[in-house]
Length: 198
Image (cartoon, rainbow, N blue to C red; front, side):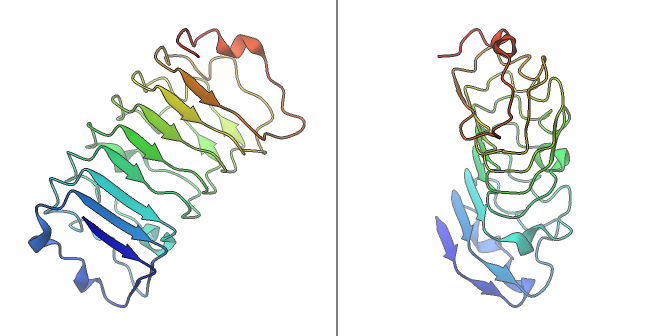
């Protein structure tokens, strides 16, 4: 494992992971950078990586290539929380077929569409708490057939759930919707599509 915390990158040349081909866990926490570091070959030699954490490293997401995670085919956990992200590119996840846990919490994501998670059919755990959603499309989670845990708490810009929001989540057992807007309207019919809810 390699854990880089409170680290400032003045050059992208460090990001040549050729000698770390056996790495299984990589973390960037509270880091910064002077120039663009997220080139498409950044993780090219890290095919064995299972856990990637990029927290409080908003510089990483400046003009991020859509295929930056493509070589991480064995990744099971991805944490990109606290990065001031406004939107998510679905193509970031296109090759992450083994991903089981995804943390997008504490960002500024304002739109959740059906296309966002279309590649993540094996995802079991999704955290999206503390964002700024103003639109959650019907069937937004419909591709997440394996999802068991979903946290969308502390999203005080959400005023209601659309009727088909949770369609397709047959395995969802745990749903967290704490600390919402005081005008949030909860229709119990929204839970009809959740036969495994505990």
